[in-house]
Length: 349
Image 1: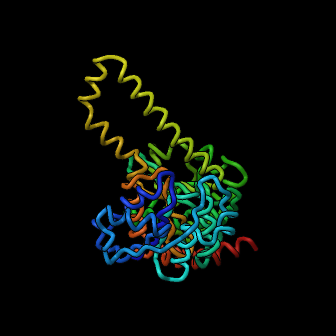
Image 2: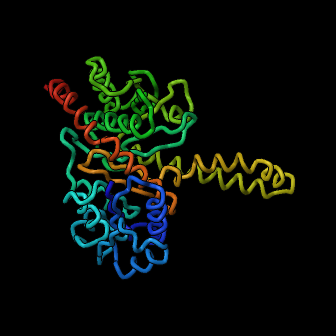
Image 3: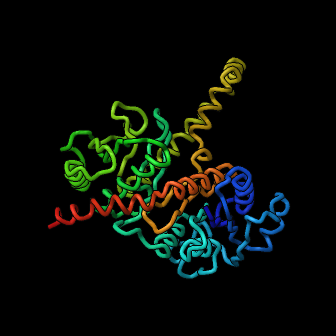
């Protein structure tokens, strides 16, 4: 894999990107070339200090501009054509790289990837896939922010793309896919979710879906239920609210637990005795373990990491990009959508 890294993207850039790239160059034999995109005068001494400035797999690509975290994404992509983010995506567009990774402005990353890389054949809209920890490992939710005004047919695409990611990246042979709703019965939900349910049920009956469609699922089903959901699909508006609510809830309870532990010597002692258990839980819940969220459906591999991504998160995001490339996930998406779209069109008629 050849990867373009937006080295100036992120709340604490470029250092986490520098350190994450070092881990990737050390541990990933399949990383053939890493293009570090950003201000060369800043990046070169940092790469040298990290000990890999002379690595033949590294190439620094100068980019004089940076997209700020608070800028309007689309406006920034149009006006800052020489930003580290835009140039990194251009390296995928022109075929130099297979994948791009940015921890910068999410809106700009989505806009740059969608505009420059276009959509895969047969895909109507790109969607962000966010892995959430669950009792069974991870449940993948899409879309979590790329497309707030989705149509039911868009969710069919999200279901296909995310299920293929579940199969080839998370090794779930026959992923169970559900539509986010306020009840599992087929009569529950908004008109939008019920129409999505009908489309997926019809396609399941036709035998063209590359997954096990289980109908509707509710919020609690994402974490622990008899449905054993692997993938949940929704529009980007609901998905983004869900994602941020889950993140805030986890942060709140973590803070409350720490506060309670510090109240007296006995709880502090108990916490010390449970240190290994807390460590395992922290690792499972940490965004660092996931690394980044792929923008599925664009003509290349585009991974979006959290703005506060650490070096470990950047490394794991690069690993995810590598897995997407090695398993030819985009080619599998094209193949699946080619079977599904003719039936979808016949249903419209």
